[in-house]
Image (cartoon, rainbow, N blue to C red; front, side, top):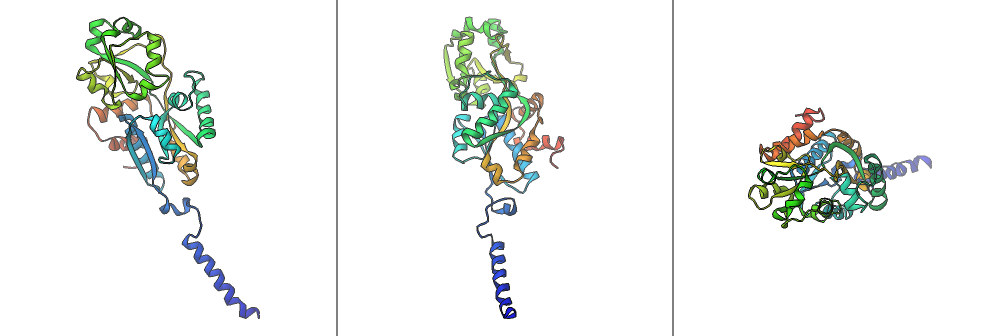
Length: 309
């Protein structure tokens, strides 16, 4: 009787194995990467973010079998990317520590040390949004008040405090995110008693063109801006030490880290990778030399030995 039943048992076992081989109800994971959707990266509307998006893409695609899609230049920056992340429309994006602390979590700027803030960011993003922060890239892109050199020469401006007496003659321009945020234009105006003749919304990537054309006299710059190397702009001293640090990192959905095995280890390769000068140099290569951001990103990763040519 045993010998007669053996073929039937073997056939049943083969059917089970066949179903397993076809996938069945097996969840998507590292064992069937070909069935996974591309990892979706969002970037803000600025050269630096375009480069960072390409850095992440090149690194992920070099170190894994996953594919990556980048949506470049999301208008409104954090205010629009964060809700999209919560909806699962994007998987990750480059973000700045004090931006997450103030704009997303609504905390007071400078309320914690940088180390304490980063640990609190990881904890609160996990608790509130099921997201986390992975690796600090190394560079600090904090704010700086920038004006045209002819304006600085005309009014003999070297510090932000000195601008207060003449601000009513000047036009300030900045991206909407900076104008609206708690640690942006409002506190700058209050701290330095600034009263500009006009305040204009300017796309973040167009502020220096607006200065060149004379549409604005003053803007919010960033310490890694390529344009700060120009001779016709002046960075005013933050003599009241208003600005806090904005270290860059990757905000990623925890669900994405679970679904894409090995992704977190790849993102950790960004730890301490980029200095302020290196970021400014890459920004200059794209904005001034006209190089493609993907090529600049790839060349940088090759120079660091993280990808092959």
